[in-house]
Image 1 (cartoon, rainbow, N blue to C red):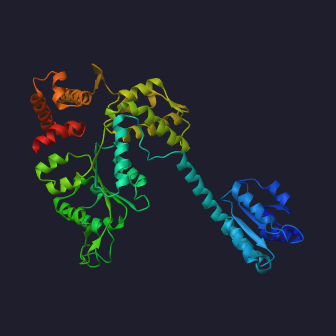
Image 2: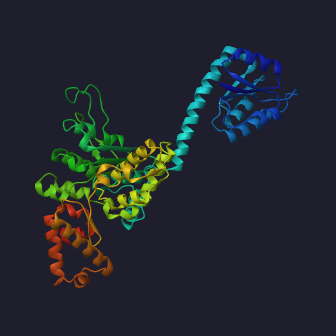
Length: 480
């Protein structure tokens, strides 16, 4: 342990140094000027500082020195010492950041050892926390990265619902698109940021105990309920409850959850006390809820309660222009975590990343960068080369058909349907009117265009997630 002792009483400093023993490296300073010269940020484990540093005992040079120390090294533990029982000085020193205060003639050397050891351990913890906080300030692993128009729209909607703080939100998108990132952003950017953020995947909960998980239970509510349990809904009071994989919820539980969504109150299992909660509900799914509703797997009233406000996350294949930014983001995180020296990706490897289909979306890209940087590190390289990429990317077979990259085997009918939907969506953006889009696309009339979109979605309902605008304009309106 490296200790700086600042005190004008040389005899006391020598006695204390001997008492602390050889296991400590002691640096002595007997004046303000000497201490100021010998102090260096992050050099000491503990500093012992006398308040008065001249023979007249009238000055408070120690407090001036304390300000300098805490400005340059805020986490260094400082023990204030004085021969006088000056309460005002003690309070002043603690306000300036001192960690403890003792009166010399009332404390034994054994007490000094104990206090210094405790301060040293506290200092280590404070420094560790500061390092972690510093890293978090440099990069945000939860940041939603991208400049694609669809991602910009997602960020706009996040801000909207976060500032509202009440509306129920349904996040839709394929697996790996970043649904939890959106939920977390709603909490961090919203009016409920100081409240709890409770998250769970309903697919991971036991179907036998899911009601207890969500609503809690009273002691004796069922066999094994030996004490009261506070459920996830109650834990989220005044905050946000994020329920991922909402499509996995059984209809019987949907009824119970629907009541809470509508009335904002519930009772624990086995209880009779009504509990009111103020929760913003954020739910997510990758499943086709409309098809589930038709099959009877999802209650209609529950479905429309979920659909209060939707945020759709596009798959990575629809925003490949964001891949460079995402690669840079993930590489930056890994470097700042000091897990790699990799600085870039070779041109050939980058082309392969751009051409790949990314069925696992952004999550798969993140895992690919982590995997590839590790392989590059093992090979002693600072650049990700094609040989370091996962096998499924390096062996990806492509066929170019008018700028379309496809992976075999392929459902050609579905691929053509996607191609058609893409052009219909673009025509709507260009014209801004359904009544004009059919003309520039060459359909006989607007009704033919409408029938075509409806038929595609009936045949390939999974495509509705990729084309929410067309789904809303044509398919959903047709059912009404």
